[in-house]
Image (cartoon, rainbow, N blue to C red; front, top):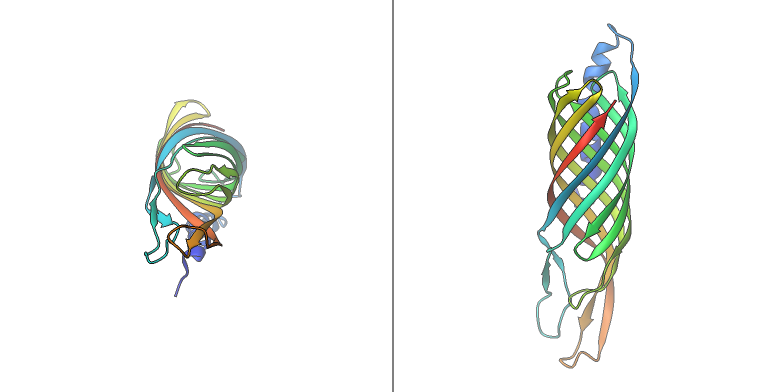
Length: 210
């Protein structure tokens, strides 16, 4: 059975296979080329799903709704391989409703057509350095693994410059803890370290230069 923690790695492997299979087929007819690119993006995303909360004596564990909003700004630099596949390194800033993070990630994209106007798929995999702030409902937490998968459309503006629109799913691990209370007065308790999954759906726009 596949574990949830393995899904980002499996999706990354699948996207690599999809992206590089056409390139392998072209090797007999054309020489591989490399071209520098820069992509700068801004966007917004809203939280979906829930995560574990505290446990009060005699009650089931709480489920906390992911009510976070995030506003990412990021830039990616890398190389286009043979016109359709891009591989790069991204850095960014993410302002959360209750937090601040600095993502560092590897980026991979694949153009569905060898055209200046085309749909594309993208994948980010890395980590986010920063803090989810403490609230009255949960303690503070540190950033961990990040993963996102998106699909979008890029259109030519002028030579070597394109405008992008993208819808994406985002996963962010937060390293924190929840509390188990053993009495109604909440004087006897223990804490349990946990990696909390935060899931988001969002939209980005960007400028793509190559």
